[in-house]
Length: 275
Image (tube, rainbow, N blue to C red; front, side):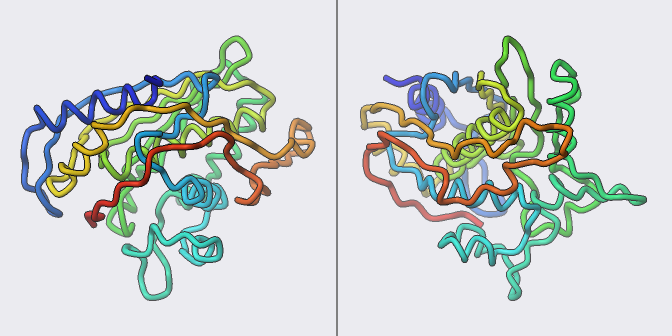
């Protein structure tokens, strides 16, 4: 069993068998509070194999965040519709992830957290302040959807970059496989940008839950045997390590430049989205 599916399925099984039922704003869930998974990114890209995960959407959404965009037009231009249910008639979503990552409103200025992160990783890699947050209390009510994956921190040791994500709310069947892949990809992109190898991705959760109308789909996934993890394919660096130029090459990457090798998972399993 590969370690990615193994850890994910262990928690999925626990939710099915032991999750506490609660009725919430968008349906009943079987949940628990507090869990963690850890993946060594050098062992393969952590994309689940017990069901197909739409990797193209992972790539497009992450690059959209990194551009600081909050309108679904960019997603539509690349054939991705995952945010449509929350967008207004003009395609706007309010000050969600992209704005918080790239243009945090500090009142007197706007803070580009991603650019600062990269600058600091280059100049002071062993700092304990490599933190990015999307949870901005002043703007929560203006967001189409408050951030679920709300804070992450990077750590450098032995030439490797690791990432620790805290996720306050985790839709285990639909959302979490996507979130794992997104932050693993982010770690690869940032590591390449600053000239490091990848280390671990640590994923911590607050409220993790399985929607009641996903239980049968979960049972189907639990019946499947994990397969080989894929390998991530990234574009070659574009002179990205010339820190004195201030250039950040990952902001220039296009979705078609990122791919996978050897991804041969079990078929996708459909489940309704709870808005």
